[in-house]
Length: 107
Image (tube, rainbow, N blue to C red; front, side, top):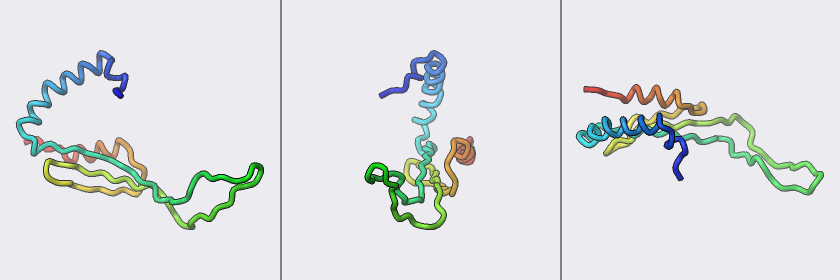
């Protein structure tokens, strides 16, 4: 499956520019390439749905305490996982962007 955005002229031009300028740089120094990934996990083990007889309220046990979302962001280089960062808040592209600025290094 391919996103339909790739068919737009503006996106096609940007992709072509990216491949034209970035690919040679990546091929010449692959050890400088860092892939940044972000994933999240919810820390509440409580089930959100269940089955019961029609007309009856579903009653289940649930753990007491605080729960939330933890976001894990890290960079993956050619030979190592670098700069792992765990945040106890839901992730956003803004946090990934700030991390990507941290990783950027232009000699």
